[in-house]
Image 1 (tube, one colour):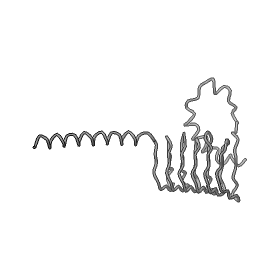
Image 2 (cartoon, rainbow, N blue to C red; image 1 turned 180 degrees about the vertical axis):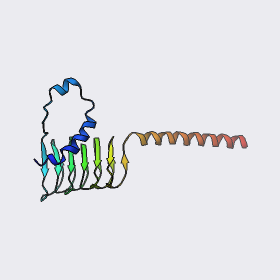
Image 3 (cartoon, one colour; image 1 turned 120 degrees about the vertical axis):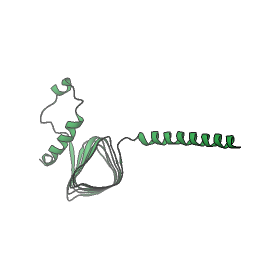
Image 4 (cartoon, rainbow, N blue to C red; image 1 turned 180 degrees about the horizontal axis):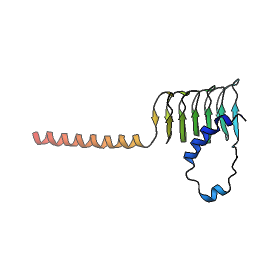
Length: 168
């Protein structure tokens, strides 16, 4: 099956993310359970928006956005996406030009080429990966820093006014 090529990489990422498993959940799981998946073949070029409730493997070219909220998107070494990607886990082995946002993790492999911004709590850039853009691992942090900076600026302005009043 085509998915077996990528099963090891996906399994590694999922193993890190499934540390929340409880014994009662693991008793009901089947060992060789494959999630549903959609494969965009190497000879396929698609334009537009893709919204999926399945894992997506991109071997072809996608020009547009991909949304797979609670699932995985894999852009294989022969795949390319020109648009934004939003999913739970995103694995890039091919080329992505656009912003990606993952609720769990993003992995840019050694063969991956990414131009755009990444937003995810966990990001892995393997040795040899090509990346140009910014990485946001804590979306709430810049607002706090900005808020602290504005408070400090107000304090400095208040002190300068007090110093000017004392001088006159």
